[in-house]
Figure (cartoon, helix red, strand yellow):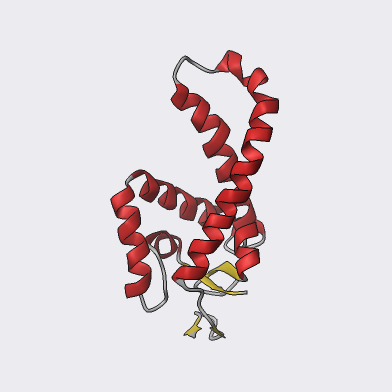
Length: 147
């Protein structure tokens, strides 16, 4: 249990719940991406260079970012978090993070993924932090709690 800035006490989500939620999100999303990509790719080809990095960025990263940021900003939960009954809230008042904090949280997460060793350390920091926060939670001042 943790006391929010508003005085409310709430139960925290743990590393296992967060990991399974992320796996569920990836599984759902990467089943949908090939279908979406198959439809939109012919329209995008004229705008893409010969670099496959641009294709990966447009087809995977942007839609996943829209999904993750959009769901967290508006609901506080992605589909995986809903299944695992956890959600993201603002640490100061317990409300849904909104667009700015959700985007910041996702950008920090993305940077940590790119620098994978830092991502691993961020995951380990969940265990060491009394509020079970990873670095992207700390940066955005959010908590993952039981829904």
